Image (cartoon, rainbow, N blue to C red; front, side, top):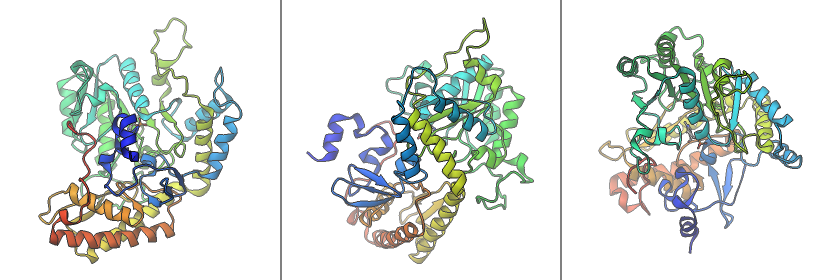
Length: 451
Ligand SMILES: Cc1ncc(COP(=O)(O)O)c(C=O)c1O
């Protein structure tokens, strides 16, 4: 049995994240990995790949970053998880509270899904209202029913579990206003990612997004979608909740909320906090977070995320050390700058092979994705798979684009050499037909109803 068969036999889906499934990678990608170091991963046969998956974007410094690994190991030898709150837990909590402007208090957990679900619960408890609004364009907030039940993946979820989740369109404030009109006084909060490849910037805004060009001084700030959502939430006394699972520790060390100059009531972080160690966090304003408190005698309690492993010392120390490295090395600036070089290199190659209408790079340099089209201009998963297949053949895993501090000029050069060869094949496949070059099935969307 090969690794894939063994994985599928032992684990439903063959991995612990659907994004790691065999249906997300070309057939020549390694079926399993053994270790990672810097920007590279190795399979059990010793083949090395330059990685742009970076553990589903959780690793932002590079795999096995020495100071983070050492700091985590020291905590393991201190016991790793004690009977009462640990000094490490307090240090980590105070650090995050100092770092993120909207954070007066923090509750740590292990998975992003737990903290987004906790944000929903806190919002409902604080406002005594049932409904939560999310944008349909944002693919994932939680594995819990309140969110997954609002997608096509409803199997196993009683209808009422997601019946209080309402959907609007990112960028279209009228669609959110319509929900406030339809459910007056009943919306507890609006949860969204600050940005994806689609930004909240006003249409036609001339400012190119870079690390240096934060939107804070933007004269058109009130036209920025995030500012509009914030204003609508304030007007309707609903909580403004930013899920920074992906944007956090990338757009800006204080979050994309600082980059765009907004002040959410609650916010969630996870990937990127601890360079791949398992840490997620719900943060927010004190009076809201206090619903989870046990201090006020006689107050009704909200049971807010009580987990055995939330205070695990090794991962919280990894978080503390990761923040230190971010400050010392200006990691966010590096991620932006590398992204910009990669973006322009890929676009130059697309031009060179006359593929500007077929191979495109969407989003700002910190939040890029490539999109692939066939000869008729239709979005094509076959061509996406072909590109990823050829990149893998040339030693680069690029099913999506996540960069780290360990991606440097050497890695950029390696990537662009691989992309040159891959786009050459792309161009031939446009002419000869993609089936002639594609060696396995096309990748499929994660959030589809049927296998
Ligand atoms: C925006 C966003 N929110 C929440 C989550 C859930 O995080 P986790 O996988 O740690 O549960 C993810 C994970 O991909 C995410 O991308």
